[in-house]
Length: 330
Image 1 (cartoon, rainbow, N blue to C red):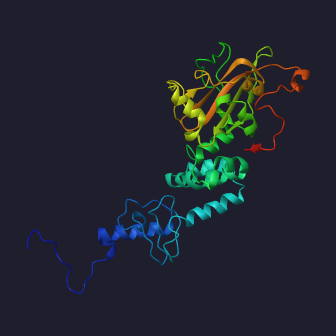
Image 2: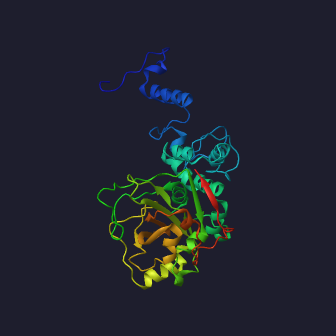
Image 3: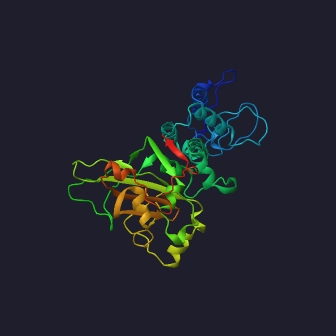
C-alpha cells in the first residue's frame, strides 16, 4: 500500500548496518568499549545515565564522584569504592596539595570528592594537632568546608586592595595572593589577637608572610591568616552580634567568600597583636568572616638585633609553644 514502508523480499534479511537505529546503538557500544570513562549522559541506553548497582561489570554513576567500573557485589559501598582508590593514589603522593588542586579541576565529580574527602586528609596530614583542636569530638565537618581550611593552610591572601583602616601608599602596589611554601600556625599566637573579654576562644594564627618593599626605607608588608574553633559559639561572635557590629560592604573573606567584620572597627584589636606581629601599634588591621576565618595585614617594623631579641610580655607572648602545631609545608 502507498505510504507504508516496503518489506524486504522473503529469504532476504536487511543488513544491520542499513538500520539507522541499530547502527547508532552499535556505534555507542563500540565507543563505550574503547573509552569506558567517557561521559555518556546523552545516551539513553548507557548504564551511566542512571544509577546501577547490579553485578556483572556494570558501571555505577548515580553518586557524586563515581567514575570507576565495579565488579558487582553488595550495595553497601556505593559511592565509596572510587573514593578509596583516590585516597590510595594521593596517599602514595604524600597528599600533595598541588596535585589535589589539579584533580579537582578535572570534573565536577572529582571536585566533589576532593571537597568531601581529599582536602580533609590533606589537612590532617599537614596539621594533625591543629585539625584535632578544630574538630573536637572527632567532628567530620568544619566551618566553610575542608577545602577552605586547606586553602587557608597553604595560601597567603596578600593585600589586594587598601581598606578603611589600612591604606596603601601611592608608591606601593597591591600584593597578590600566592602559595606559601611553609607556614607556621600557633594557638599561642592566636591568644595575642583576642581581646580580654574573648580569651576563652581558641584561635590559630599564622606568622606573618613577609612581602618585601621596593625601597629599603619602606616597611615590609606582612599578611597573616587564622581560624577559630567553633566560631558560631565563640565569645568573639557573641560580642560582635551583641554590639551589632556592621559587616564590611567592600571586603570578603579570601578563603570562603563570606562577609567579614573588621576587628579594628569593632574595637577588638589588643595591643598584644602588634607586639606579636612585630609592627607598630595601629599599623595593622584584620577581619573575621562569619565562618570564623581570619585574615589581615600589617606593616612590619624594622627592628635592630637587640630589639629583636627582647621578650615583650603579653597574654599570648609566652615562649611556651608546646601547643603550637608547628610548620605546615606546602
